[in-house]
Length: 282
Image (cartoon, rainbow, N blue to C red; front, side):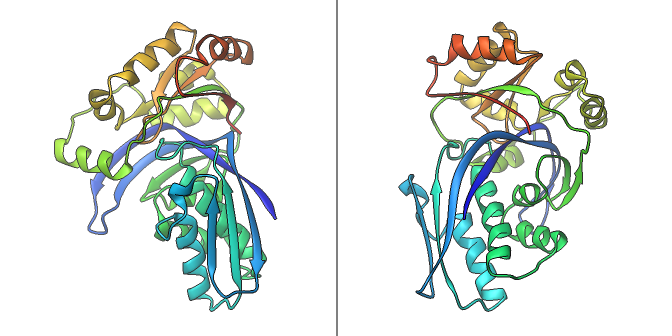
């Protein structure tokens, strides 16, 4: 089977206290975007798990896809082997959830392929053991995410937002971002409100969505990587309603009033950075 594995952006991200498990309580509004990796999953005669990719950096047992397959195989005593191939289009460690999306995609499709008949609640519970962003990709589309990522409330009236994504071509470790946040304990003041943001999405009010974008990681990442501020300025100069770091960065997204403005901005800045994508939320 061949499957698309979609990236996400965080329209809102507030980080709470660190728990004894190592995870953090959080509040986030996340949406899938059309940018995706392509995955294929096929059974093999050997009783083992093989993960291959166009990006050799993820061909190891630390890959979340490998961990998902291993957990399912062991927990449900699956005797079959599996080969998973990932064509990577989503930049690694970019704040776009590529690895988490791949893991959730593998989880859902192995559930079908191995006929495990797990319900969504069971899948989300398994996903939360793999990583805090993985449960969201099981639920898909737009959602208010809380707890350690396992409390997911779908935003049912979500609509397509035109987006230009810019990645400066380097990686930012999520582990580094959280440890820096814990160490510095920044006092972050914002007028953005997560409830107002959810209401704005439901009302399809793009200007109110723009006014309520927020990410607790942004000041930390911007302080270390000055280019991120330049990217935000570039997007705003090219008519983005607002721009924000996604996840732990370094990818920045700008949201636009229409596809025409987003397309014009994309054409103007597509060669200024290593990765520039014209996309939209789904």
